Length: 302
Length: 278
Picture 1: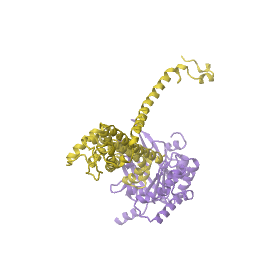
Picture 2: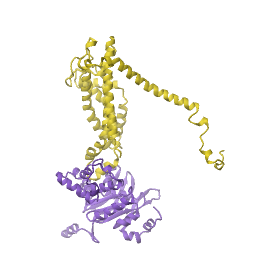
Picture 3: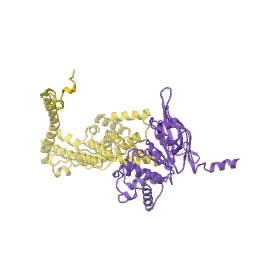
Picture 4: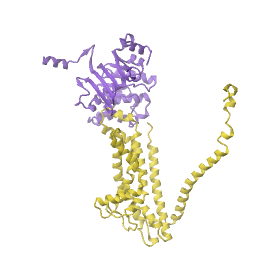
């Protein structure tokens, strides 16, 4: 039974709670310790990984890495085919995934009738697809390439197809979120001036959502760039001694090259793998940095 | 006989000194199976300011949104009845809602400039309506619209700045300028001053008095004093409750503003005006 408040003078009522109930007792401190430990584990492993990779690889991070093809002699081997292969495959992936992803998101967000069952089915399945393991997209692509009549599956087009399918759900979801963040008043204003829904989407909603779309797309592409599993399933070669020169050209990528060198017996190849990892990590960091810059620079306050 | 009826159709119906521009007959609005607004009959006269007043949920905004067919954008909404605009039913199947919206402009409760420059905010309407303007013509048009909305002197040196850089009242005048750049005949305003301070509100009200020489203005307002200050005619809407508890909005009466405020025909109007409910 609480005492009537008149009994307390104001300074008593404002005083801190008892020690057992405050933020500074033993239990709270232990809990805080556990939180710090969790953070340290997460951050610590990342630092260890980055530092050891850097120390292992920096000695071999030289011009040979960029100019030489793979070689049976570690001293003469380089990641040129992997670097160019990664760039080419990601470029083709972007060409396939971005227009289709934005188109699908634009339809779902701006044109579809939300009360129709099939549109809800699309939505639900796209959410699910983004959680499908990457390797399954490799399987799917394997089947697709067969159905399309390609004899070789380990070609630029095949790799890009697998990666595009992999990141398509992510692009659709982030694009939809960016479109949804555009206030309805903008659309109302445009439609009230006699603009069609198409004009409104094209001239108002899409440009306003572009920063968010770019951020999501770059993050998706950087995920695709680091991905090896679906490409391994396609049988992407590891020993390529030429530049990829077209959609049907053979290719390899940096993650594949790293995977291959790490499993080689010679210590020098492991060093080479670490050097390639430095490059791959730098590129991914740069891409994420650009994405964050775009998000902050063009973020709109409505 | 034939001659006569055609003559009647071409001569605008004169009531007082102003002709009827919108003739609303038996307007019903449904949201799904819910009959939200019932049996509205009214005549909006050209080059006058008509105010819609009434308590929340009385259907005044819904009725307003029928005049430029923005209710079409709500998937479950259905409109029945007739709204004659120069003798054409706005809801007849051969009428293109896009054309309706070009001729019947709208200003919203919250200023909603586009995330573009002040210049592009104004140039947008004519652009989407496919007017092929030369650059100089477009510049003249932008200046005219901004001048008409009383904003030109404040923004003429910063036309390339974002519309968001303006104050709330300036943003709302930008939205009015944007609407009149389309050269509409009717300007609908849905509580245009609801989010503005008294000084910005006074500017908008003065502007409405100037605009009414060229346009027909229909304004929805929660503010009875505003209706009294700006409007020539006032329509009083209210929410009625059916025996099963369903609420719906309907028009009680419409008359000259002076009459509505001093000697309304219906006691419900009088109760609302005198502050007894709403």
